[in-house]
Picture: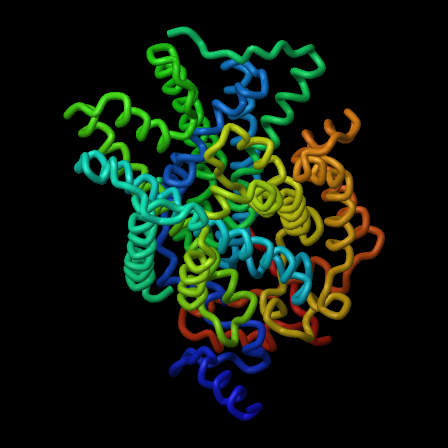
Length: 536
């Protein structure tokens, strides 16, 4: 039996042809060509590519729904807009800070995680994001199915009133099931095309009845900023997975620092204003655009309504597909390649995600398990169909935001943008730290989330805690980031790592051949230490 397993594992190993043999001195356990520096010929993205990226990422169902949920906290339209602008500014800033290694050294999130947490320690941030991607791929597929229901209902009145023949225990209706499965088919098709195209590798202001004191208003705004910024934390932390394909080092700068805040803010503001207009006319408050379209079909099933909801549903369907492809499927494939590079490529990892994401019956997470969603949202941004979006989504800031801050602090403040690139893929390199783990990063991460735990547990269990812990939880995005950065930098200064701020380039590899990594010996000084290489 053991021999059969060994044979199967050998068969599944990533195959490399010709010049794509793993260079001497590197173990296939730590790298394959999906996580090595991107070759020059594959660096195709320009400034408009990154503007398009953020247009798709920010113009989504989730971003649209944020504004209304801010008003549910008791904020006015103006205060809600202020929270949104500040939150998306944070998103753009951290996207730039974490994306710079990609455009500077053409390496992705796996490399950033390894240099900060160590080769084994990097499993923590990578697995957190993989877990989030697997679940929310399926959840997004469910909402994609819901948008497909809108489109089909606009074309067929009989489908709109189709009788549900499935039991209540199924957690989904006869109407939505084929649509959700159809989304999965589209995901596979688009994914295959994208990978192949890349050579393998979208009146009167509605106000709350809540009267807030100045103190409550201040913490309410901090709460809104935390939840809004936390929703896109995963995008920011793994931005280097996309900037590594940049044609020039400066191409992502303006789109990240300006494009993300502007496009994200505009979408949420439009959501506030449009929902407000519907409320003034029809006295209906529905922040979920998909549910709003279904309500419109139910209220007035006229030819004009059918045409309007058809094209709106089609646009949202497209948005959900592209967001899932760009924000869940491909990034999860990249992360899986970083976890198990000997056996998994980006393509294999993405296919595994698609299969698991449907097998887990994601509609059950949306329709049945509120507690599960509250816990799960700790690992990344999510969308909920209820007006309780923010009480659930705030926990997106608890775990991923301090990880993002530690990654940025290590690259900019500790290593000062200098990496010994070959050592990222070797067990005997400087990023091995202590038994493969950088304990400084682990301690900083642990201490940064401790303060949010009482509020997190209270949110999950809907239990009562003191006002102090509640407010600490409401400020978790800002507080966790501050604690993580301070603790990590202090520990790194007090206990500096071996080889700190020494750098060795991959050379221009793999412009000619990845084997030029072996030219590291020619770059070493007489003591065999890597030479200083100043990065832009």
